[in-house]
Image 1 (cartoon, one colour):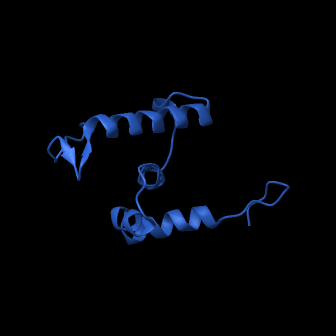
Image 2: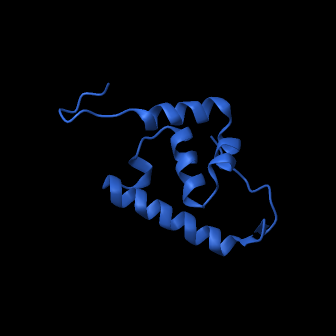
Length: 91
């Protein structure tokens, strides 16, 4: 798999790459802190990651759904709506 190449100029809707770099770096650091592992060892579904990034950069729920598409939005919603009972059994 090759790295994704940027498709936009040095500014994304007025947000400079420097600001986006800081934001995404902080996201990575938070993921590493919360999981206790470096990001290359964390296994997550890409829809969940993209959803988290959308929220992290401040997109509205409408924009996040637009980015994810219908099926991924439904998938993320189903994961987020799962509740865990006190004994750890999902229902």
